[in-house]
Amino acid sequence: MRKSLIPAALLVLAGIMSAPAQTYPQRPITLVVPYPPGGTSDLIARLLTEPMKASLGQPIIIESVGGAGGTIGVGRVARAAPDGYTLGIGNVSTYVLNGAAYSLTYDLVKDFEPVALLTSNPLMIVTKSAVPATDLKSLIGWIKANQDKISCATVGAGSSAHIAGVYFENTTGVRFNYVPYRGGAPAVQDLMAGQVDLMFIQATDAVPHVRAGKIKGFAVTAKTRMPTVPDVPTVDEAGLPGFHMTIWNGLWVPKGTPAEVVAKLNAAAIAAMADATVRQRLADLGQELPPPDQAAPEALGAQQKAEIAKWWPIIRAAHIRAD
Image (cartoon, rainbow, N blue to C red):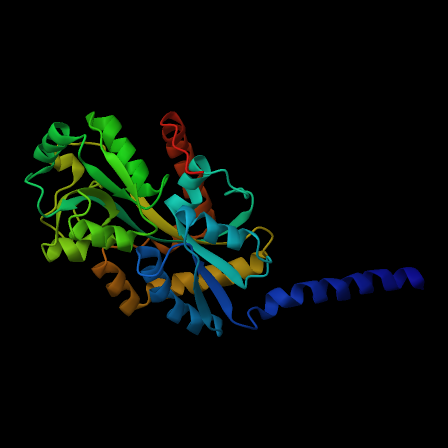
């Protein structure tokens, strides 16, 4: 008689253990943005959270945790309970590049579960408006003639802006001085003010200022032009073929988060990206959306690993350390 009770007890226990995942979410969710407010990650997070809230039935509270190239905010996610109530938005900088540039207290692959691949956009090579160059070839010539004086803004050592700068130096043979900032927004402000000369910036951050004539856009690091700034050529067209770099964004949760919870978050993210208003606003920012099948957790995980294989050797060869 006692033996017959054991399977029943196990079934009850299994039901109790799976109940939190089945009823998730039951309280507000925190979305950690690892940068100061006003940058691309912050904008994307704010566009997606309202429709995600509608799908999940709970508010999503944005928590900006900037500093150290995004490593502080990502660490906040890594240390959170794996219950689906803390997730992080990040990009190729925070979930790929930082792994080679920083001595992290967490593992970018082993300590997180990928949730959804979100938007992507190329970088744009931009300068302050006073730079005399009129195209990318003449810009490279101007930098070579003045490289001891040229300043290039970055969002911290090891950021995508920094790595793109190193990649550019290696490809063209130029050199310039790097000026680190805590986020893309303050860097762009100084670029517009003429305090720095050059930047490799997410196209989303550059588009409105290039349109307004406040900074100059020389090329996008993609194979095709952007509809939002059709007059800015690709690097291939501008004379720097193959200089491609895409800044993609994604959602992650701590390792050990139940698969059912990850699936619910993924479904909410995909539904949010399908919203017509959200799609238009992201398009206006120059953000490209993946097909639904490419937004799956597995797709984000594969993208992250492929980018690690590409960029870590470049970072290490350049001896880039942000510690």
